[in-house]
Structure formats: C-alpha cells, structure tokens
Image 1 (cartoon, helix red, strand yellow):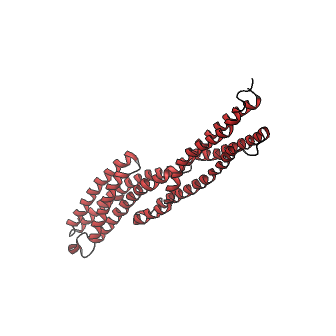
Image 2 (tube, helix red, strand yellow; image 1 turned 90 degrees about the vertical axis):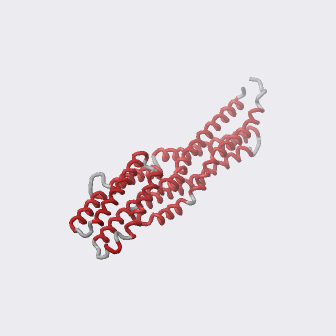
Image 3 (cartoon, one colour; image 1 turned 30 degrees about the vertical axis):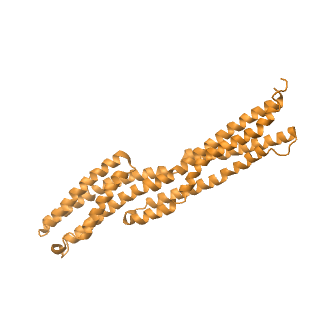
Length: 309
C-alpha cells in the first residue's frame, strides 16, 4: 500500500470516527434539554396546578364556613354557596391530581388519603352547622376542622405540601441544566472543531497531491458543520424557557389563579415544541455528513488501489 493511500485510509477512518462521536454527543446534548419541554407542559404543569388549586380551595372553604357560621344569616343561607363551591373545587382538583401526579406512587397514595380526610373534614363542618345554635359546640367543631386542615401531624394541607414538594423536585430535575448536560455541551464544540480541522487539513492535502482546487464533497461536509450553531441557539432558548416555567410554577400563589398560570406556562413553552422536533434531524445530518466524507475520499483512495505494494 502506497504512503498516500495509507494516509487517506487512516484519514477516512479518523473522520468517520470523529463524525460519529460528534453527532452522537450533539444528539445526546440536544435531546437532554429538548425532551423535557413536553413533560413540563403536559405533565408537571397540570399536576402542580391541581395540587395548588386543591390547597387554595380548602383554605378558602374553611374561611367561608367560619364566616357563615359566625355570621348573622346562617339560618337563612346555611354554610353558603361559596363554601360548597370551594369544597367541590377541592374535590375535583384532588381527583385530577391523583390521576396525574408526577410525585410517583407515594404521592398518589398520599392524595388518596387526603381525599378521605377532606370527606371527614366536610362532615365536621356540617356538624358545626347542625350545632350552630350552641356556641361552644360550634366552636369546638370548627376548631377540630381547622386542626384536621392544618394544625396536626398528618394534616390535610401538610400532606398536600409534601406532595407538592415531590412534584417540584421532579420539575427541578426536568428544568435543570445538570453537570452531564454541561459536559456534553462542552464536548460538542471541541468535537466539531476537531472535525472541521481534520476536514480542512484533508482538503489541503488533496489539493496539493491531486492538483484539484476544491473537493466539492468535503467542502459541503465542512459547510454542513455550521448547522450545529442554530442547534446550540435553540438549546439556549429552550433552557431559558424551562427555567422561566419553573420559576412561574414555584410561586406561592399559583393556586388562586391556576388557569392564568397554566396559560402563562403554555405561552412560555409554546415555541419549544418545534425546537424539540429538530432532534430528529441530527441523525439524518450525521448520516449525510458521513456520506459526503466517504464520497469525497473514497475515489481518491481507489486511485491507488492497484498500485504495487
């Protein structure tokens, strides 16, 4: 094998290996960020908002019940429509939260327990109403109801806070740019710059040994490397929107306007979905890049195939 042919064979192998490493790293790095945009929008956001809405509705239900029972129109209006609306909202939110929680099986079991406790809490409020004419009994039932809600070990709101903490932990994992992604995105420019350098040197070598100004296949392969720039920009934009969504969902008052919060998160994350779809083009681009490299070098290697060893 001639020295030129041996060099070209080694260079082809090196280019294909670096291409495979660069494209694989880019795919892992890009997918690592973009894959979570749908999970944040479709799973974490509704799960967090449902628990927040249930918490806010239960707090409001106690305020409404206490106001009605201590008011002057209790005999006429009963516990009031606002109390029943808030209690119904809490029940509906809990039912949805059980189905969609991102906190895993422990969170689901805790929510089922909360649903049972809310039923008992409602019964105690009803007993306070039944005994509305007895100030001591009414006050005792109200105190017991509040204790169940937020002042005892294993109280309703405490359990909901624990579930929400687990769900926010999942959200943190979905939206954080961890050390693995940081390492991957540090490797991406190194590998692609190495590949660009190898392609440039290879074209210089071919120009001097084969007297051809440009190898169109390798030139096209070099130009294709520029595609990594918009992908890096997309990643930066997606990560920024993920962090913005996390900040919105971590606020304390999201339960009071869960619909508005859901819309805000949806608006924040809207443009990330088509960016996430770009991940499907990375393997295709890598295949095209490898094909261009082979097309550019294989004919030059074949020119030396039948020369004497």
